Length: 169
Length: 417
Image 1: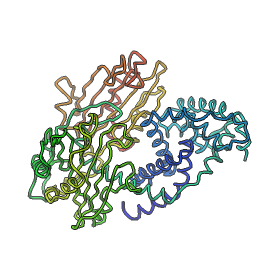
Image 2: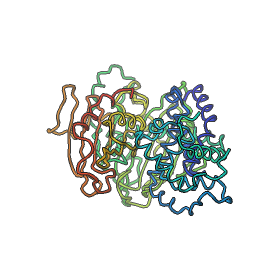
Image 3: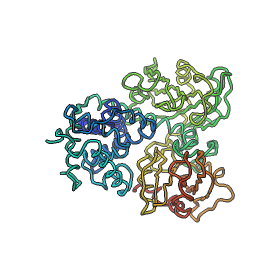
Image 4: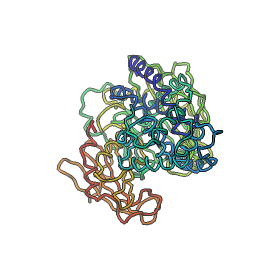
C-alpha cells in the first residue's frame, strides 16, 4: 500500500474502530474477546480492499457491513456455538431491579439466532432501514421483516414490554 | 435521525437500550487499529500465496460447496502468450525442472502425484505433490513468484508473511526474522482450518528477498490440504528444514527467469489470471441474478464461491455458484463430448444427479459453463436448504433454464454489478 493511501486508511480505521467494536460487542452479546477479533478481521478486510473501499459512497457503512458478514460467517463456521447459547442462565424477566440493563439486554440478545441478532443490531443500533439491512445480511427485505418481527417478539418476551427503567434516557 | 419509522414504542425503547448498552463498551481503539492493519497485510500476503498456489486452490474450490474438480492439468502449454514478443529472460525452467529442484532439497523419500508449472506459463512457477518419507504421505506445495516493487524498493520484512500480533495467535508457533543476505523469512506451524474443525496441520516457510523474490513452501500432515484425513501426527519437514529449502538459491534463479511482462498480478481484471472474485462480489451478483419473488437468505460464501438458501413458498432450496478464472486448460476434462458449444465459444454442460453430501433424497442440478477466456461459472441448485440434511421438496426451486440463465449471464464478466 502506498504511503498516502496507507495514511488515509489509518485515519479511517482510527475513526471507526471504536464504533465497530461497540457494534461487535452487541453482535456477540458481550463477548469482548470475540468482538475484538471480529473488528480486527473487519479492519483487515477493509485494509486489503482499501483502494476500492475508499472510493465507496460510505466507507463507514461498508465497514459495518463487513463486520456483520464477518460475524455471520464466524457463526456459520461454529454452528455448534448455538448450543453454548442455550447454556446461558435463565434471563430475568426484566422487571427485577437488581439486574443491570446491560447484562439483561446482552443475555436476551444471546438467546436470539445469530442472524436475527444481526438484524436487530443493524435496525436498532445502526438505524438502518429494512432495505439497507437486507443488503448488509444478503437477504431479501421480506426475510429481514420476518426475522425482525420474530426477534422483537422474542425480546419482548425476554425483556418485558418496558425493557426496564434503565432504558429511559 | 433513525432511518426506520418505529410504529411501536417497544422499538424505541429497544433502540435506546441498545445505545446505552453498546455505548458503554470501551474499546482498545489504538490496538485494534494497529492489529487490523497488521492482519490486513497478512491477508494480502496470504492471498498472494493462494494465487501462487492456485492449482491447489482451484482444485478444491468451495469449501462449503461441492468438490468440483479432482485435479488441475497445469502442464498444458500456455495459450497464446508465446507470441507476445520480447522476453526479458533468456533462460526458462519447466514445471519438471521445478519439481526436480525441489526433490533434490527434500529429505529422503518419494515425491509423487506432482503437478507443476514452469517459468513460461500464465501463472507463476509451482510444484505440488505428495511427499512420503516413509512415515505417511503428506501434501507439499512450493510457490515461486516475484513481488512487484511498489515504490521501486522492496522491504522484505514488510512483504513477508507477518506473524500474528500477539506472537502466535491461532498458530502453534511463528517466527519471523532476517537472513544474513537481507531476506526476511517467516516459519510457522499452524492448522489448515484456524478453528481446528479438522486436525490437518499446515506448516510453512515464507521468504522474501531484497530483490523481491518470493518463495512460499507449505506442507500438511495429510495427503491433501483439504478433504483427506490426517496420515501422520505432523508434517514431514521440521521448521528448520522448511527454512533451509525455502532459502536455497535455486529458487531465486528460477524466479529471475519469469518473464517480466507475463507476471500476473492479484489486481488484474482479466479472467485468465488467478485472482478469485471476492466473496462479496460473488454474493451481490448472485443476489441480483436470482429470480424475483424468491425469499432468500445468504448462505456460506468465500472468494470465488457464494450460496443462498431460497424459498419460493414450497420449501427451502440451496443455490450455489462457483466462479473460477483460468480454467481453459481443464476444458477437455470438464466438458466431454456431450457438452454444447455456444456461438461465442462458451461451453455448457448440464447435470442432474444425486446430492453429494448424504442428505436423503437430495438432488443436485448443475449448469457448468466455461467462457473462452477461461472463466468457469458453475451454478447448482438443491432440493434442500442444507445438503447434509434430507430433501425438503421434490425438485430444486430453480429450473434448469433458470440455472442456465444465471450461469451465462454477462454479469459474471462485468466489472459492475
